[in-house]
Length: 457
Ligand code: F0G
Image 1: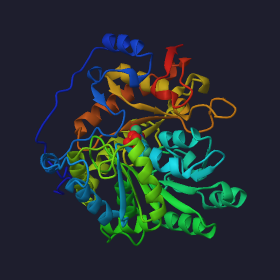
Image 2 (image 1 turned 135 degrees about the horizontal axis):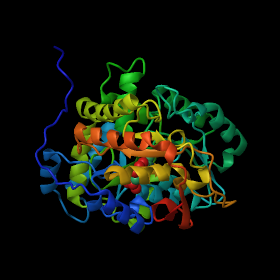
Image 3 (image 1 turned 180 degrees about the horizontal axis):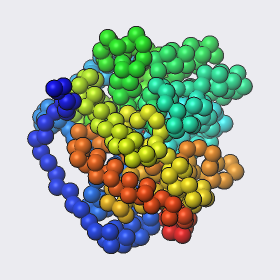
Image 4 (image 1 turned 90 degrees about the horizontal axis):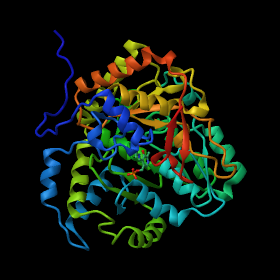
């Protein structure tokens, strides 16, 4: 008999979670204005809102926490973290920040000014927020194939090189850098190929431009390169990471994802100019340059987390769990962005709730229905998140409309995945009866999805 695949870890500590009744959930979601961000966590049974900062740390990470050096300046914990980052990425300058968007804030404060243009492959919402709040424009150059959720290709997160070059040709002087998000979260946790990274870097250099990686899930991206791209099957994850980052001039990182910690981030680069500028902003916004908003113990945990998650077995365990959920959805015929992403399944809400008009936010409606069904919290990555066009103030209905089921690292078992899939199947089975969605009662001027208040129609 073939020995089945199993996790590369065992569980040492557990946290109780609680089921609720449908009546309770009806009341709670109404009180939360039909916005799952407004729900208290004890009102959730299985929480797939995000994989950000929600994972379980290892025994080695927890023991490293006890050894944190809390010196204000020059803490050994900083150097441990910096040395690990340098070994994995090849970048010698490292600036800690309290999370990913803080890294964006520090670096973009130095690099982006009003009227600039930042081409990229589906910028993440906070990234776009940090570009647009500086009155600059985020231009999406993702490949067109990414929009066809049923098309199964290996590197759906890639950038369209022709679109990028057109953008560089048309507005070169307004472009401070090209941004590559690995993996591409917004389009489904889809990876970018090494080939594409190489081409992006070559085109950028042709126009004398710098390349920045938004690297929140870089290790998952490396796993996909190893398992899908020809020529990389015998390379280690660490070798692949070094090559990936050789096609960029710097990175911003949310350590809450692939560094497997609950809080943290950083900037890394070899450009002295970026480093010198960012240092100043770090001190103003985050803290002194050897802690940048982090405790010594946090930096120790990041060092160990990065080391562990650039190990093939750890990544394989994770990605296989996401694939497990995908296989269940395949069994039930539920459409999602194919192939399964690295950190999440992105259910194609428009294909499920075909009767709900786009103005009534089908993906948010599906998110609410899934919560009502079994207390499972997913997250809308669709028209609500896409926000309004900063110039016309019109809703941006042009993009994808997903319910994202993001799986925290080392947190849930496949039994939990079975519950999620069954709950979604029940909603899917009665999809034709769901004909109305939600409408906005109140929204913030930017990044509205976190705080929006909705009403059920
Ligand atoms: N970049 C990407 C690709 C992200 O996915 C995120 C966060 C950030 C930057 C910002 O990092 O949260 O540490 O400030 N993504 C989370 C998510 C929130 O749910 O996908 P942060």
